[in-house]
Length: 555
Image 1: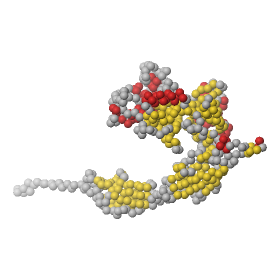
Image 2: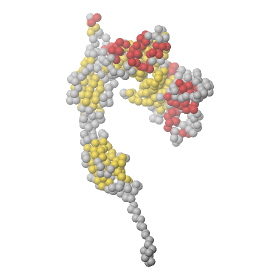
Image 3: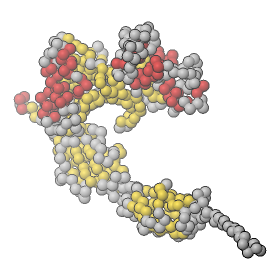
Image 4: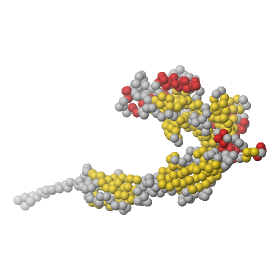
């Protein structure tokens, strides 16, 4: 107040308290196991061990400063509240982050929780594709017997481990729990199959055994004596399974040689097939596996058999030494085939599905292109065909409404950087890319090919690298596409990644990436000359509904 006793001024002092930079915990507790070392705010790394039967723990962290934020594995949590942590097999890491009140400083506490490995080496179930276990399966019974008729020359075994992380070996081969083995060949008489389970701890083991007796060759009553043919010669050339149920009676197989080419011919018995299908539900898998290493394998079905398979939404899976084929029966389109034969009765139409080694001409064409372009052939040509026969006439079933899967065995890559891809060998010797990837089927490396046409396929190993895309964002995809024969450069080792792409060029990349066959004999747009390089790809893209033109009929 002033001397005059009247004037008065008020002063305000603002005191700002700095936000805390405290990033420590005041405590950390766990409801199972013991923290090691014992908790100290200044120690940021901890370990705890729990028994295998503990599948979750609760931790309770408390921040030292009540205004600090607490995050557990990136999720905001309330300080002092128990937080449940699910535990998988082995080690589970928990990150506990404290963010100071000032929003600048932070710290990370790490908790590593080790869940002991399981010592459970028991089986939960054991299933045979043919025959019945005796006695019936129980976890504490380790030896079993089963008997199968002479007609069953192979069997599959499915074993389910009680502990999902246990290791399962059947006859020494690692098998996934619950998955059937590859066919195990049975000789006449006793066949011992050994199932070995190793617990997750890698120490505890249990062994199970199945003694499967395959019956002797049936006596030939009509001849008054026993059939003396050699057992190996009488073994089926082809195995047939309907949803893993062995039904070899469904096919009649024979091996022939014509013009020096060995063939296995498999004729499907329609009546037997229908009987087998009555025992399964919809969408069955009909697996036809030919065991002979021949140049050509054919599976023959009559049209009414195809019709039944179509009504069941069945998948035909044909396996041969040269390759395999997975074809939905509906893709044969038996009614359309009948129409093309003048609405003939479907039961009189014969459908032949064939997987064969490519002829010498195709192999020579492939070798010539490989030499020119510098790629390596990983699998020689294999031809997949479907042919319909009726009254002396025949037609090819070459196009499908969806991508159909095929597999071809391949050699190992010679260059770790190279790309494995599949190609179609056209009649003029040109190669067309088709989508493919590598996989392992049993102990064989294969190329899994997806295509909407039947053709002759080969698998190549190729490596292309453009100098002008090195370091560019497009380097990996461009070199990948070029190695797969989908795109090409604009001169030796040049791609020119910044050049604009036309509508036709973009369409071509899509068509070539999908492996679609192109039609160069026609065009559907008024502004495209049939002689232009892109006429065929634009027509194909339009046919498959990938692109459309403008309302005036132009592209």
